[in-house]
Structure formats: structure tokens, C-alpha cells
Amino acid sequence: MAAAEKHDSSTEAVQTAAEEEKAKTFKDLGVTDVLCEACDQLGWAKPTKIQIEAIPLALQGRDIIGLAETGSGKTGAFALPILNALLETPQRLFALVLTPTRELAFQISEQFEALGSSIGVQCAVIVGGIDSMSQSLALAKKPHIVIATPGRLIDHLENTKGFNLRALKYLVMDEADRILNMDFETEVDKILKVIPRDRKTFLFSATMTKKVQKLQRAALKNPVKCAVSSKYQTVEKLQQYYLFIPSKFKDTYLVYILNELAGNSFMIFCSTCNNTQRTALLLRNLGFTAIPLHGQMSQSKRLGSLNKFKAKARSILLATDVASRGLDIPHVDVVVNFDIPTHSKDYIHRVGRTARAGRSGKAITFVTQYDVELFQRIEHLIGKKLPVFPTQDEEVMMLTERVNEAQRFARMELREHGEKKKRKREDAGDDDDTEGAMGVRNKVAGGKMKKRKGR
Image (cartoon, rainbow, N blue to C red):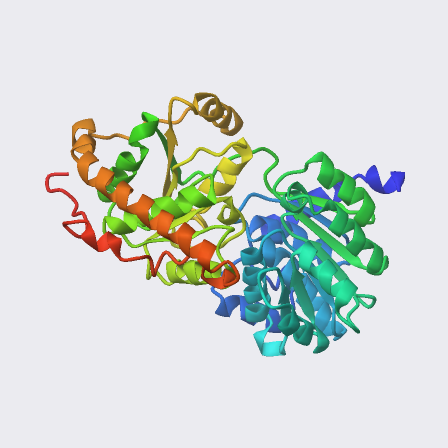
């Protein structure tokens, strides 16, 4: 094991650097023709850096540690080698992908199914918030790929008759740092004990924490490290700004920015489920097409929100950090950090929702009198001083009265939601339906706030 830890991967690094120069297509990396066609159909014109580094080594049968920034094509980097191997030796319950969040699990499943559609790949998504019985039936059919959150997978390993992973050939831990930060260590240990030691393991992570290093030693054999970005950084085409504002005027400044940048799609990050819901109601009261996504919503509503935003039926998605990592939403133009993240690294993941795949984007961070130290930490982490987003303070203050009125109605709706929850506690599925909120928003005069002339 000590030899494995000290393995020098410099030779592989030189090889992959050379390969990066000449590799122009997935075929050059060794991917089979049928999967190359699938990549074409998905619009993947050429491999990303992490794919160029990881895929050839994975196809050689090596264990991989992939360190790459958000939006770098990590899913393709592990899905293509697994599907390639599945074509060579077809088998049920072939690969397990562990992921920290439900949404990410569904997204990974979509990519596997899209890449493997012509070869009939079957996936099962095993996550909380969904009926266990239907999942047990899906597992009984022995899919090729299981994508799961650790807690629910353990539940099925212990309680679903006939289900085991003794024949597993591939294990992927995606967003490994986040799996461990969410205190899934015990579950991961249990899973490692019941799957074969003779398997291939891919560990993908944005950061190499002490916990991830410990997991690497326990789970991987003689791994090769593929690091695309060794230091924390944000995408070059991302324009980053901050706004220093008094805490009590945050809502007003948010409405001003949504007006100023009208016509764009927005992701607005809040620190709590309650504030996400409140701000969504506030904006809907003012006529904006805002929709929430947070951990207290039922799984079906979370997916519904995500799909409406992806389909551009809604232009503003308000989210907690449940949505900051891994979710591929291609058309986000502006990220607003309405509440500044407590952990500086979360800033990188949040703003990584825009300026993806070579496109440009904006990120605006609200800094109140209570957030100065947190903001300084973020600037230190990314190694740059951010400019101020230009605003006209007099114009902002003109919005105060209507925003105050909308705040009042949002509080009423939240209170009504709370009372409704108490009355229907057993009906967990209907807890957080902002779409069907009580109609008091209609009392706010004036409909959607128009963008002012002359700006």
C-alpha cells in the first residue's frame, strides 16, 4: 500500500501531455466507433482536458484520481471508459456511480443513457425522496449501471432481497470531496466492504482534501492522478463583480439588477431553504418568473423546478448550495450570490454555473456589512480583486416601496405555507409548492416590473 501511495505518475503526465497535443477526437483517445457516434450526436465535438487525460489511462485499466474544476466534462471522462468496457464484456450490475445529491444522480443517468442509447444501456437511479419499492423493482431487473446516493444504496443492500454488488467491475465516486463533507463516510466504508476488491475505481473530486486522500488509500490501487487545474480558479470568460450594500436593502438591489439585466437567465444562490422560498415568492409577487430549488422540497418538485428552468419556461432559479455543483444547466447568463457562501470554495462552484463550455457569463456577489471578512477570503482564494458592479443608487431607492409591499405578501404566503404544512404533515409531497402559492401575489399592483427607459 505504501508503494501505491508513493507511485510516481510523472511518466503518465508526460504521455498525456503529448497525447493532448495530437488528440483531436474521441477516436484518437481509443473510444470505440459506436460511442464516438454517440458523442457526435450529443454535440461533443472534441474531448475536454480531463477527458484527454483520463480516458486513455482508464481504457488501459488504470485506477484514476481526477481533479478538475466544475463544468470540465468529468461525467464523460468516466462514462465513456465504462461503456467501452461494457461493450467488450457485457454484464448486468457492471458499474456503480456514487454521487452526493439526487439531482446530480439523475443528470449522470441521463448522460449514460444518452451515450449508451444505441447499445441498449439500462440505468437505475437509487436516491432518497423516491418510493423504495419502485427502486427495488428496478434493481431486480439488474441494470448495467447503478447511480446512487450512499444512504439509499445502503438501505437497498441491507433490505432488498436478492440485490448485491458482488459482480461489480467499476466503482465511480463523483464529487468525492462533497460526498465526504456531507458525512457519508460510514456509508462509503460499508459499500467498500461489500463490493469486489478486484475492480476498477475512478475517484473524481474538485478538491484533494485529507478525507479524499484517506479514501484514495482505502479504495484505489496504484492510481494515476489527472489534474486539470491545480489551483482554485474561475473561468476566464466569467465577469465577476461585487456590490457592497446595507443588509436591509438586499431585496431592493436584487430587483434592480434583475431589471437592469432583463432578458438574461439567472441563478440566485441563498444560504437557507427558507430564504430561497421567501425570495422566490417575493420575486413572483413582482411578476418575475422565479422558481425555487432547495432540500426541503420533495424530489418530484426539485426535478420539476430544474426541468422548467432548463426548458427556459422560467428565467430565474433560486437555489441553495444543493444546486451549486455538478448540475449542467447550459444557459445560465448571470449568477447572483444573494447570500455570500460561508465556505470560500463554494463560491467557485456557484459561479461555475455560468460561463460554461467556452461561453461568457456574469457573477455578482452581494456583500453586506456582516460579510466583509468572508468576501476578503473569496478574493484571496481566487487571487484577484473584484470590481464593483455599477448601480444608480437613486433608481434603486425608487423601487423600495413596491419591494416592501412584495416582502409583506411573501411573508404572508410563507406563513400560510407553514400553517398548511402543520395541517397536512402526513402529506409530505405538497410541502413547498411555490407555483401554486395562495394567490395573494395578485394583490401587488402593476404586474411585471418593466425595464426603465434611458438605461
